[in-house]
Length: 306
Image (cartoon, rainbow, N blue to C red; front, side, top):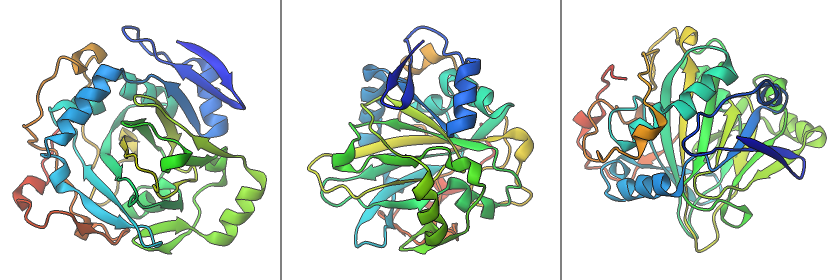
């Protein structure tokens, strides 16, 4: 693992074959900035295999369209338990889970994973929001969650990359209001926060990843380019932050980790048993529509599976 400066952003590098360790400096940066950026978190071979698996369509058939309030849609698919296929092993690998546990300070479970797909010329924006602006409504008492966004395609200003407000997790939860099918941070408070907090474009090559706290304000623009911008985002919650009521994401469920080197050995793309794909109609925090209305609903039934 090595570190260097990229402008004002410190970034880290994952070395394949080595255990990724969270140093005290890295933990301090996460606590201060609300995120850490890791280049090469997954190798080209691992990301190529992920994309190949997604192209088979077994997962993507569960996707839904999320309007951005600006006449464009992003396509998204969400599953609540990782399962044993390639995407599940990715969400259970130590370089994600061990790192998350060190950053959050305790055992975590898989809250859900999503793939966001911004297609060329049509991919919609994501309004400025905090993930906890949504997840607070899911009976979670504490903001003890984080997400790991990993680029599948090159993600830059041209095709609507992630933007974050550095240190915005320290603002606490901000009220959110409906914007299209999404919820966005209350505009007046957002405008004031943007006056004093640094706005950072998070440009990623395939395999790069960013770990970010659930109260970090973030957004992304529409994709008007001729390039795809797909990302996979595993999300984790601390085990001692189990929601006090059932909802459309997972309750605390023991997470069975896999070794990093086991990921590339996995060739399972068809067995999606127990993943529990989210039906957008039961998520009251968004307004969305299924891309494929003929999906077998039995594949979406909740199964308590790690």
